[in-house]
Image 1 (tube, rainbow, N blue to C red):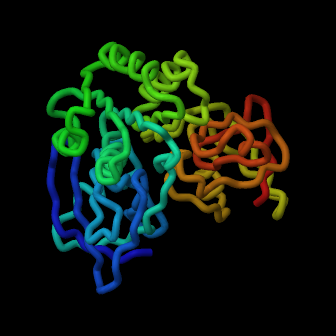
Image 2 (cartoon, rainbow, N blue to C red; image 1 turned 180 degrees about the horizontal axis):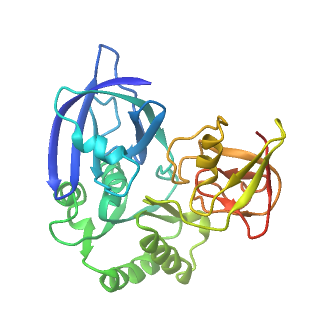
Length: 308
C-alpha cells in the first residue's frame, strides 16, 4: 500500500471531484502506463480503483477524477469528502486498459466519466508522437476534462452530444482507419456495445477492440449455489448480490480490487458448472476454467464449483 496525501481538490463539473495526491514521505511514486488505476482505500479492507489522468513517467503527483455515486457503496462519497491535507492509503497503480504498442493507429472513444483513462491515453500518444484520434460523447458542461482533452488532442478531437451524433462520426472513422488500428472505449455499457458493434460492421476483429466499462451496480440474476472445493462448504448467492459479496458475507477470503470485472484480481479457478461471464478482462479462451467473482454468475440452473 502507498501512503499518500491530498495536495489539491477541484470540481471540474457538477458531481465530479478531481483530487491531486502526493507521496506522504520521501519515496518516489511508482510510474504507470496510460489506462492504469489507483486503488483508493475508502474503509479498511475496501478499495475502489480510479483511473489516473496525469502523465505516468516518473510522476510527482497522482491525479484522479471521481463522479459521485449516491447509490454506490461509499467509495465515491469518501473521495468527495476529502480535503487538502488528508492522508489516503492506496494500492499502487495497475494497468488493465493499456495502449497496444504495435498498433498502427489508435481510435479513442469516451463518454461521461470514461474520459479519465482516455485523457491519459491521449496525453501519452501526444507525447510520443503516435497517430491517434479521439471521439468524445458529452453534454456541454457535464463532462470533466473536456478542455484538457482538447489541449492534448487538438484537431484530432471530435465531439458528439448524443448517440446518433456519435454514430455519424464513428462509422466513417472506423472504415477509414489504417490496417492494424485499435479502438479503445471507456464509458457506460451502452456506449461500449455501440462501438464494438460498429467496429465489427467495419470488419474489425475482436483482438483490436478494447473497452473499459464504468459499471456501478451488480446486475441481478438468478440465485445459485457455489461449492468450495477446498473446504467443502456451500455458499448461497442471492439474485441481487455478487458471488464475491456472498463469499465475503460467508467469511470466505477472496482477492478483489475493482468489483467491475475489469482488473482480473478476483479471477478464480472454476472446476465445474457453466458461467454467465460478465467480465471484460478475460478473453474467450481465458474464460475456460476461470471466473471473475465480482461480476460473473452461474448460468441458469447451474451450481458452480470453485477452487476455494
